[in-house]
Length: 148
Image 1 (cartoon, helix red, strand yellow):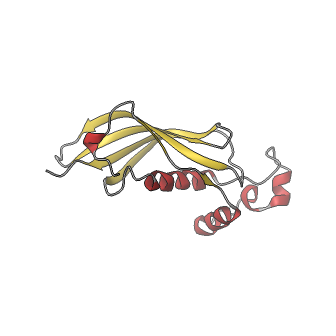
Image 2 (cartoon, helix red, strand yellow; image 1 turned 180 degrees about the horizontal axis):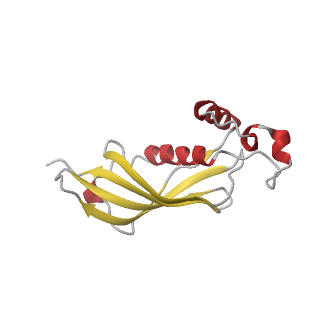
């Protein structure tokens, strides 16, 4: 069910569905982004790195998070714009085959000069299947108010 600005409360938390990072995701992301860094695309090269294997692009995981957030339905038709990503950190590598999910917490609600919208500041964390935080930061999102 879509949520409007008025439906959100500071401290409220949301969890996304989970999704496994696949080989196809990594290959497609490399093709679209042009990032063929061998840590992501070359298994032999990756074996010699501290990770010992290929890892997913950090921005691929961020893109997956935004898609998972949209699939949750909370923002269906109510997001006007993603305005800012603050202090976003890639904390641990995500391996091909890892399953990720996101969690958001509303930190702040702010009025805007426009009566039909408001701003949400959210802390966002991405977890792997082991419960480790692999990415985190804050999103500033402009959201519609309920129609009059």
